[in-house]
Image 1 (cartoon, rainbow over the protein chains, first blue to last red):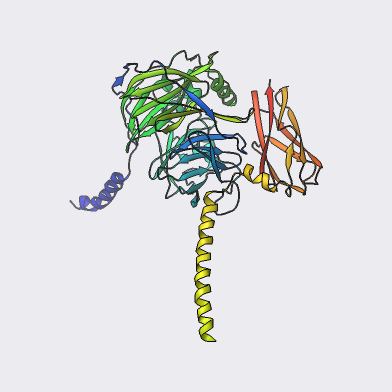
Image 2 (tube, each protein chain N blue to C red):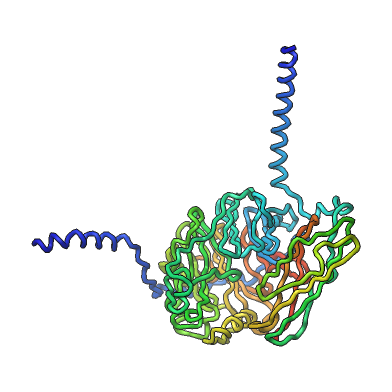
Length: 383
Length: 149
């Protein structure tokens, strides 16, 4: 009895502490799959225009912001605003030490915020938040809450430690909701990198960045089962995803024909999707670390894979673009409604969904640096 | 006398307040509607230095791995004032540069050389360097392209 009394206090403390720790849920991929296909749109009618010529580096990304199109110049740090016909409305921000300028020489990533503001990430985890009038609200360095140090982790990879990861710059747009930015992440660790079995099993693929606190509160999510089963696909080990409504996500992977519906904590609810047409999926992979990056560059240009997933709230549609690869001269766009494929059509090579401004879905293949032009495509659907 | 001063003060005070509010509005207006540099250029060309790059894109063709490739660019000042090159910023740590001079007189030119290492590179490679100068356009870019065998 006395022993019980003595142990009861420490036991209670341990129990309360253990209950306080939020354990990462085990991801269950064994969910209902919908392969339904009911084509409503055999073709779409694309029209196109060029954005007005502006003084840009022709390096950067195109976004929909409110009812405008933005070209975010990643080298010059300017944001060019255009109307929906491509007419230039003005130039904002830019490099400099002024209160409403970016004190960095490169924009590594950009995401329009839900409140109409803007979030820029520089090359050194430096983040700059602007309001909808392009007035700087805050800046901070991302706190990843690393547990280890780089020297120790070099020989002892730990997939749960944020110090292992970097943002997958340039591969997929970053997404945001009211208070959180969702960062797609990957590791370039020499032992724990995408070609390995350990990576396919344990790599975290997303990070939650709090816009207010400036820290990554958790890294989570996993690659889908195809990456464990098939080593050939591992050059494409990152998510393509978008946020749906208030608490859901649609997650895809470049080498997986399925799309997964989940909550924002990566609890998978269901899966759907069908493979794109004429995709060259004759993937090559290597387990050699030094060859891996070079191989990724080559595979990225030559093979077929899913390049983006976008949710259009106004139409309640999920759009997925894919590169066909091989000798194809066009890429593909799939449109899903209620998890059923309703269109799978050709689009210009390298075109990706930029966003939706009623009544048009906008796409772009990015700036053409050689010709110094930025072409925009658009189409409308009557649902 | 005091009475006159007070009346003047009231009138000027009102005018000053109106002017100040109007100026504040203009600041906001300018801040939200800063014109594109291309619009500015036509108004200030006559007094500003003008930076002209003879060939912005240098294609080195086929090159072997583990070599250093050079791209050469002529930067001309076709304006009326001295052109100051504030910085050159290559976008890869694999790339160094040299610039023959930072200050370029009107109608004079400078030679920029980008030096890119092809170590660990394969296939078509493109790197850029941003040039900042004291012109209305402010920022420029050159690129170096090579096919690494």
